[in-house]
Length: 183
Image 1 (cartoon, rainbow, N blue to C red):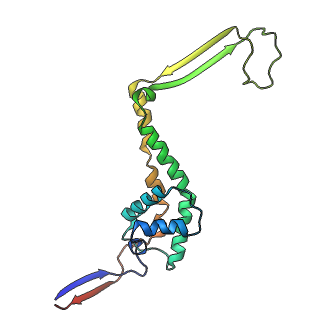
Image 2 (image 1 turned 30 degrees about the vertical axis):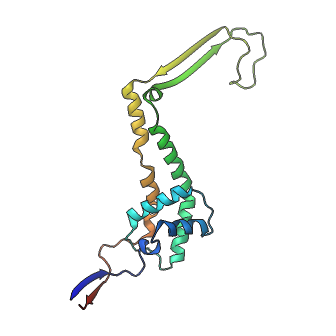
Image 3 (image 1 turned 30 degrees about the horizontal axis):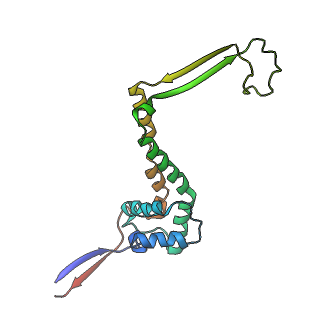
């Protein structure tokens, strides 16, 4: 005779509500909240949520309210997460030469240009008599330090933290159910 101890919660677990990525994407496409991230990123979000909260009980007693909160958060924070992922991907693809490119500045000067001054200070002059150009280049170490700082922020963890409040946090687990199987 085998005795099994199973932890019981008052609400279902994330993995019980969304048993597969297909269930998750189905809700994303049909919940009624506008689709704002790509289906690929929605699938990725499922796996990230499963890894973080797969065996966590939801905080809401009403599963429909839980789902509305979940998809509202995707609608609210998803576009920024998706954009940050795209930027991080682009940053990771930069070559060393691209990393080293510095800023460029051009300063023109005109003494007595014989034209009316522009109303906008940033309008180009039609006549110049001197020009200064400055073009910088970063050292390799400065270039890598710059990209290191840009990539240090974790867009995904910041995004996933928004969902933490949808799940219960226990100092002590819920009740236990003891099950005996007769051979």
